[in-house]
Picture (cartoon, each protein chain N blue to C red):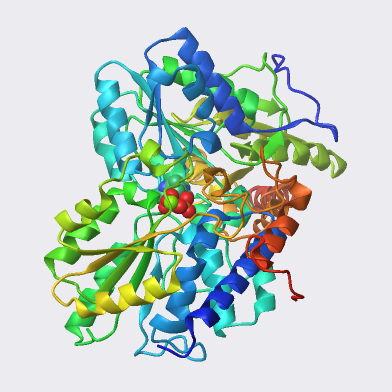
Amino acid sequence: MSGKYSIKDLEIISNDIREDIIKMLFEAGSGHSAGPLGLADIFTALYFDILKHDPTKPDWNERDILLLSNGHCVPVRYATMAHAGYFERKELMTLRKLGSRLQGHPERQRLPGLENTSGPLGCGLSQAAGMSLAMRMDKQTHRWIYVVLGDGEQDEGNVWEAAMLCSKYKLSNIIAITDRNNIQIDGPTESVMPLENLKDKWEAFGWHVIEINGNDIEAVIDACSMARAIREKPTMIIAHTIPGKGVDFMENDYRWHGMPPGLMDVAGDPPKAEQAKVALKELRTLGGKIKSEAHD
Amino acid sequence: MTDLHLLPISKNVVLEPIRKGFGRGLVGAGTINSNVVAACADLTESTQISLFKEKFPDRYIEIGVAEQNLVTVGSGLAAMGKIPFVSSYAAFSPGRNWEQIRTTICLNNVPVKIVGSHAGVSVGPDGATHQMLEDIALMRVLPNMVVIAPCDSIEAEKATIAMALDERPNYLRLAREATPIFTSKKTPFKIGQAQVFHEGIDVTIVSTGTMTYEALVAAEELKKHAISAEVVHMATIKPFDDKTLLKSVKKTNSVVIVEEGQINGGLGGAVAEFLGENYPIPMTRIGMRDSFGESGKVEELNDKFGLNAKQIVMSAIYIKDKKGASNAINTKTN
Ligand SMILES: Cc1ncc(C[n+]2csc(CCOP(=O)(O)OP(=O)(O)O)c2C)c(N)n1
Ligand SMILES: [Mg+2]
């Protein structure tokens, strides 16, 4: 927790996590690319700096809770958990296969360290509210509950039902993070169902809102530490991220919401046989900004 | 037997996801009737409602990821004389919005057409959260609701056109995977009408959705075991075609029911309820046995959960033996 790693270290970890995401999705032959790649910096910040947790004791009763509401982005969680020491990285290659603990959408009972089963959107914040209310009854409010949710996910009424409830009960140990990547399945969020002005909406629902660059690890850490200082309301961190971050041909392209590299040809992108290779090369060289080094 | 114009069971069978048939059927229905409209919850291409959206953009409404809103908006559209087709994954619609369907569509009794795609374990790697297994049960218990699970893309196309002409609330169950096309344009389809796709005298196999093809494969295989199986395809689960079923089982006196969903409350439940009350005979049900699915390849999952011809063959042999045994007991006591 806190400060064990420099920002530079964390950036390297985050990039390694992105490489694993590409490899595991390629191996699985199905799954979501854009969201998980865009969330790698946030998950690195959470597991390697922000969260109070112990990979050797996943059900430690003093741990912070991390709920993934947009369950389709779970590859980033699996990859980050493996890097953090919850299980061996080679297990990542079992993603979506028969008998794997790494189900296509996360199932709490299969893998220690997952806090919720998700995939069907819109439920994470309500679960957080329930947990927070229970913690209050049990005088455990020193524990933090982090919830990651998608932006398209916020089309669901369930999210706003939870928003009102958290605000009503001043559930200030809830820190929600919106992956504001501006895409969902059918297109850009603002064309499918406009969300803006999202900040105003959350504020109107009684939340403290912080807007950050979600691909800036330091900003993520700072925003969470700020959120922990707000005790009169729950906090929503609107984290602007780039979907597909790190892979040029996937970045900001909603067509990569639900596809793994190597599945099919996409107009304007590398042919399917090349996609994983090109993606890994770009990640290793940070889009050509550094020279490629030997890597496992 | 009237000619059903079925295609032969062969290795060269053409595969197509049944949802594609829905997409084409909806464009057809929309062309015939300008009151046909469509709405979707951020899954236009997956559910193939995209075809309608492209053809009739002014009659299409994008709801966003909001399934409760999807069906209740449908209710409003229908109240004003439209025939709305509203689509999402079955896990979310009718999985998430059941009460809204119950009150604003069924009790309100308006002709909303709920289309649930990606039903069954055959969504494979996505896992249990997305493998809808309870939709038949959920929709079947609702008064006024019609429940249809087509067996292939050709039948899905016909079902969609028929739904646009039907004045009741309807549920259409679709699947994601490409599955065999084995009916043809000329194969009869009528809402509420079961079809005897294969005649036999020893055992009745009642099936719905894509499992019907497996039932036909099983019927061929059973010939090798000297068992003559009758396959009754129930594309419509509700209203329940008890006449066709009863006629078949009075001949065979044993029944195997097969579906890609929970046997509790599903087609298995429907048949068991009816026969239990009216014509109790040896019966076995194939489907999910009170469990969730999981991630895996479709063939692996079908194997694991016994959703294939192999399992149907085994069950048919078992049930025929059981019938033999109970006949023997009956003759003894007589
Ligand atoms: C209740 C529900 N409805 C529909 C879906 C299908 N679905 C999966 S992801 C997604 C889009 C979500 O958009 P967003 O939260 O922005 O995720 P991103 O595309 O950014 O990864 C949809 C509609 C779902 N998983 N759950
Ligand atoms: Mg998004």
